[in-house]
Amino acid sequence: MGQLVTEQPAQPANLNHLDESRSKSPSARSLELFQREQVFKLLVSSVKDYAIFLLDANGMVMTWNEGAERIKGYKSSEIIGQHFSKFYLEDARRTNHPDYELRKAIEDGSYEEEGWRVRKDGSTFWASVTITPVYDEGELLGFAKVTRDLTERRKAEQREEVFRMLVSGVRDYAIFMLSPDGNVLTWNEGAERIMGYRSEEIVGKHFSLFYSREAQKRKHPDRELGLARITGRYEEEGWRIRKDGTLLWANVVITAIYDNFELIGFAKITRDLTQRLLADQEREASARMLDQTNEELKQALEVKSRFLSTISHEVRTPMAGIIGMTEVLALEDLGDDNNVVVQNIFESSKRLLRLLNNLLEAARMETGDLRLENREFPIRTVLGDVRQIVNREATSKGVELEGSCDPLIPETVYGDELKIRQILLNLVHNAVKFTDSGDVRVNARILEKTANHITIRFSVQDSGIGIKPEDREKLFKPFSQADESTKRVYGGSGLGLSISKQLVEMMGGTIAFDSVFGHGSHFWFDLPFTLGRSS
Image 1 (tube, rainbow, N blue to C red):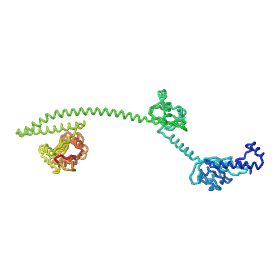
Image 2: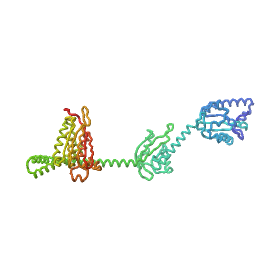
Image 3: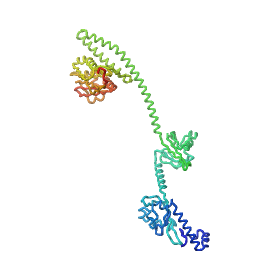
Image 4: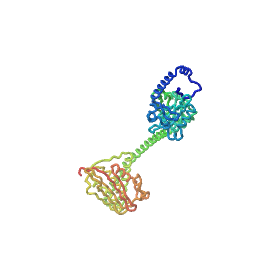
């Protein structure tokens, strides 16, 4: 048999070699060919990175090397004698693609392609395939087939393509590559939208175009690249310039890109934060204005509080004198008409004093000057005092004022006696004021008691005019009453309930009410106390 060749040249490729070979005897040439064939087989069989094997003219596997076993998974004994179409996907076999490859190899002298192939275990890999026909003196002996597994390269290319597609389609960020010198190499949609340049306008230009003249004079763009080169990454926020000359406030990140320790360029990501900056500036301006307004309001409240405090103190002193003198006059027999006048002076003075006290209390609450006391005091005494203070007013209207106290309530507790007295007076005065006939009941009972603490519910119930459902929400607001008609008929400042609610909550309690319009109201508040020593 003559020497195998992979094509049929018109003339010998190496005449000197052929002449030298022909000058030898037939036995010498056969030995040389055999030796070369053995060396070739040894080299091919030991190659592990390539599947190198021979097919006969019909596509049957004739040889199998280590690389073929590693890449495709078949042992030599399993695959020799099998058709090479076993390595192809079902669709390729159905369309006779393996036979097409052999025909093209014969027609063109060789055939190359990349595509998916199948291993013994059914897994697929991306292969680079070269098929070369092998001839002996013009007769087709078969085909040499070389296959290389390029799956990892294929995956990398796919990842790169996906990344490229993702980057190019991003519109909220300008993402582009720079050469080591700072020239623009790539340009995505976000860069075009944010900076205003089309790809053909900017690729190849230096990225310093995006910087002000002053920044260019300072060589700030070069400084950014220098720092990115040294540290691997550079980030800042600052003004940049669009194509149309307008400014944008940008967050910029520059990352140095290396390949085998050699700088190949920079990745630059720019985000337009102009709207955020403007919003921040607007918030800061609003905050400054709010601080200024709050300071002015605080000063105004302090002035108002000082005024109310001064007026209240200045007026309360003579009012106390008037009340005291009218009480003395009421003891004298001045005649019916004069006694009525004295009584009216007395009641009006007390109402005015309550109003002054409420105004002073409200002023203290506004400025945060109100302080609670925690002293031992007798609950029953407070309830009795409240009934005694309001009883004359109730009697004059023909309203019966009743009271009861849970006998299990201890003699003394710790708390703010004056504030509790004030809350009860506000509620009882209101109840009497809005009740033209019937009764007002003041009660206290235990809600909860432990070894050292007690929670007491104080309640004031009347049979007065009641409250409309639509007026419930505004009842505890300052200077609010049920409606204007109520204010005109019954008077009052609308501060009592608001102050009472704030005082109750300051002492850790709750206040609530229930009412049926035309049938009366029921107010109550719950307060926690520490038991007194006498308890």
